[in-house]
Length: 237
Ligand code: SF4
Image (tube, rainbow, N blue to C red; front, top):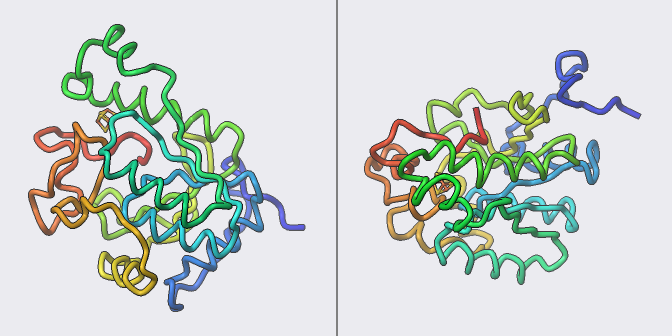
């Protein structure tokens, strides 16, 4: 049996190589390998953006009992929660869990002040996203993310398999070669539900207080944390 690729062994074990000249640009191959390699030690942290919808559909073809976690900050759009209900109905055997932070919004306000996302968004993301994901990943060896290289400068060097220094895990990114057009072509072909906010100028959707319609059509993440230097929630380096 092949030695398990862990964070600690990332530089020691030759990495599995994947071609990406097939219909899913390597995504299905990567997912098949990842689920057979990691079994139930693999978690998908899904944001339920359009990339997440594509990945869920691909994952369901590979492992219809896969564990999928949504970091439920309690600050998402109602449209996002409605979409999650539709996805649960479409893929009833997937294990979709909404992971909450340890602090409620009221407790966070009491301990750190009102509207922390305005005064200290990094702290807010730490409490509501990073720490909960850390808990989720404590029982996992690897996690799946829907990052695409095209999304931003900070993501353009992402590989199919990445050492995740923050969470001491292996980050599996099956969609790195997909373009925005590829994503929507797949959605259309398969009639997949998606967040209706995508039709209202929001290519990237996170928490309501920190997400606006994209201000630059060429930059898919330009509606996230507008007016602030922040570009990532702290889950991806
Ligand atoms: Fe808080 Fe905004 Fe981060 Fe959501 S995206 S956790 S509201 S700072």
